[in-house]
Image 1 (cartoon, helix red, strand yellow):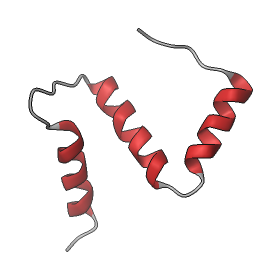
Image 2 (cartoon, one colour):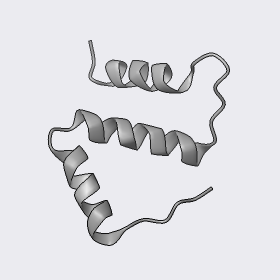
Image 3 (cartoon, helix red, strand yellow):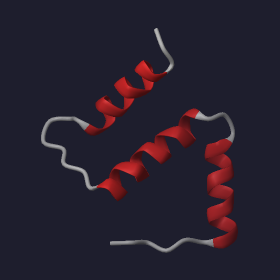
Image 4 (spheres, one colour):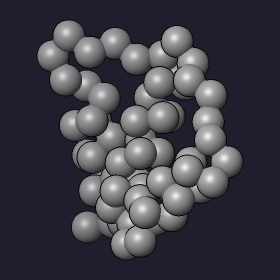
Length: 59
């Protein structure tokens, strides 16, 4: 099995649920957050940066 196949499956599972419709920016955000969660230590680094620099909320 290639490395690409599990990633493709994961992306499909995350973005192709029943009734889900994604714009590119929203899909990229969800995939980036998923990558942070799965990467050891990166989730905490992410929140440390948010606390340090803040962020804008886009609605």
